[in-house]
Length: 339
Image (tube, rainbow, N blue to C red; front, side):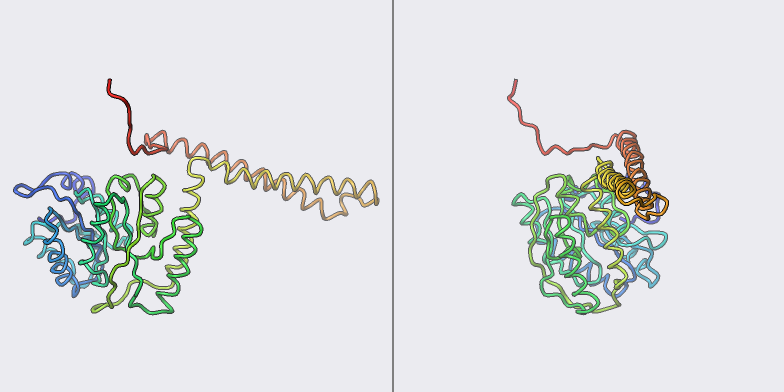
C-alpha cells in the first residue's frame, strides 16, 4: 500500500484504517530516510527477514524526508509491491525528528520500533528489544557499545552529550543518540516533538512513569552514502537539553523558574541599597557618587522583570493546558473494589 504526499489529516485517517485481508500489526518499525537509495533495498530485505521470524503481525513505515537521490522512486516501488510497507513521502526535508513524528502518527502497532535507514542499526536486534517489552518494560533503548564511527566527530561528542543529558535529566542512558529503540505507544502518544528532540523521547516517557531499560545492540559501519550528522548538532542538542530541562521541571510552574531568581535579585538590590544608605551615614559618601547604587537599581529592576516574565509564563501555560484539554498527569491504572 502506498501513501504519498497526502495531507496530514488524511494520512492519520488512513493510518487508523486496517488493510483488508491483513491483521492489524502488533509491531510498527519506523525508518526515516534521507538520500539512502543504495541502502533502502538491502534494509527492506533485512527488516523483513528479521520480522518474519517474530510470529506476530508487523508493518514497516518508511518516511522519505525529502530525498533527492532517487530514494523516493525506490520507496514507491517497494511500498507498491509489499503490503506490509507504508510509505510516507515528505514534500521537502523537514529533519529526522519530523520524520520520526510522522512515522509515529501514521503507524498502527501498539509497539513502535524506530531505527536509522543507513544500515548501521541491525534489524536482527529488533526481536531482542521486543523480548524486553514483553517482560513489562515500556521503553527499551539500544546501546551501541562498540560503535563504528569516527572518534573525534561522532563518538567523543556523543559520550560527552550522553553524560551531560544523564546528569541533567536523571535518566542515565549510555547512548541517547541510538535511534534503535522500542516503545509502547501508550507512553509516547502524547509526546510532541520539535527541533532535534527525538533523542529525548526516553526522558519524556520517564516523566509519565514509564519503565525503561537499556540493552547492547549491534552497530555496523556505513556501507553506502555519507553521514548526515556533524559537529553542529552538538549545539542543537545543548539548546534542546535546556528546553527539555525547563519543560520537565517547570512545565506547569514556570513562576518558580523565573520568580526565584527574580526575588533573589530584588533582595540583592535591596541589600545594595541599604549599603549605600549605610555608607552615606557612616562615611559621608553621597549616593550619587557611590557606584553600588547603580547595582542596586539594576538588580531590583532585573528581578522585577523576571517575576513579571514568570507571571506571563504562568498565564501562557494555563491557556495552553486548558485550551487543549491537555492533562497535567497520567494514570497507569485505577484499582477499586467491585460494587
